[in-house]
Image (cartoon, rainbow, N blue to C red; front, side):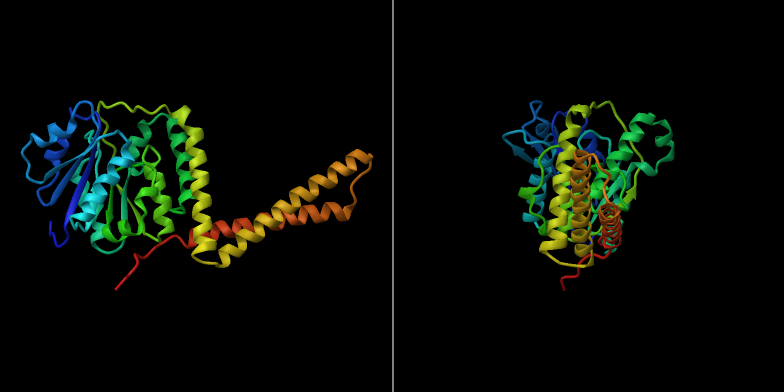
Length: 317
């Protein structure tokens, strides 16, 4: 592969001693640097990586376990300090096939994207084998992250096989991005605020014997709360801080009219019920029309958000 760009790979390492060596061996020779971030791993995954004798490997040690996001951000910071143009993130559990690295990098190298990520949902064979409950859960999660991040064309939002260019990294406030399991979703939300172009790359799933430590039912309420908060932050900055557009008007009008229709209609219904009389036609019409117009404006706001998804990388020259 032609390597006009300096490319680094970041591998967060926590309890992956049995796999991290295979991951490193699979990284193609044209990758310039491999950062293995030992996230205070009790099994000392960093030592295993260093023992391979690959000159490209630099082990970064975190003295306190901070989660996958904290480890990846440590690698990102080091890569930027060392002057790398593109940084790939691969997990240390050997579930991300390095044979697809070129496909992952192609949209960035060609100037069509700032950030690319794997998409396992285009693998129809894997989808057929996935339990229906899990497939339904993934579909719901994908829709929620689409709405929160504003990348409506994206699928498989929690896929951790990613690549990002230096320009997009420099636009992010890494310290504000989540350290834990919410890292990938939070990255997408903040990339949208920064105007970065995100592109999915079809990469089949490759599952090993590693078991996730996450208990999905227990984290979902917190995950949804963080998505809602992230969505609010994105809307605030995109539509009211950095710009005020037609989408901003749709949002304001929709929210105000819907709220007015609901509150006014509910109050008048309560008054009528207390008095034992029917609400007047005019009162009902005001409440219903306000709700209908409010919903229409909100639908237009969603359509505007879809249409204004970042599509061209920013040219700073």
